[in-house]
Amino acid sequence: NQDIYLSRYVNHAYETPITLPANINTEHKEFCPYIDVNEEYILFSRISPATKKADLFISKRQAHEWTNPRRLSDNINSEAHDLCPVISPCGKYLFFLSTRSGISKIYWVKTSFLNE
Image 1 (cartoon, rainbow, N blue to C red):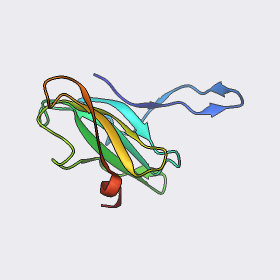
Image 2 (image 1 turned 90 degrees about the vertical axis):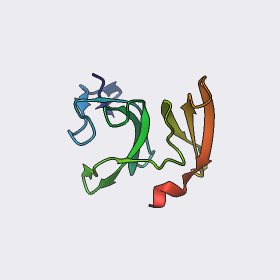
Image 3 (image 1 turned 60 degrees about the vertical axis):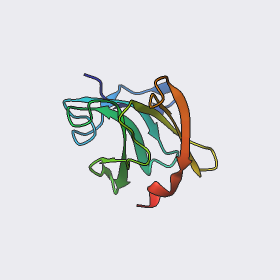
């Protein structure tokens, strides 16, 4: 299985990695994280029996904890692999890879889902 870890850069060195909480890292595969520069949210891919293929999820930080991840809508996710989320520097667009056309291509959507 794949999980997402955190390693902070402190005093010119990375600390020992720690795994993110159980609501982020399940017994399934979580990978390809994108963490907002202000650490307000994390986007990542997850493969589970419910998804069968990689789907994109979001978890938001509330106080010092991450909310339960929410699968992004079917306007973003497809029946194919959807992975490698990245937000544009201006914060207006989500770019990600998808195999919905049979091969891996880059797709993009507006980030209005961040306000949901």
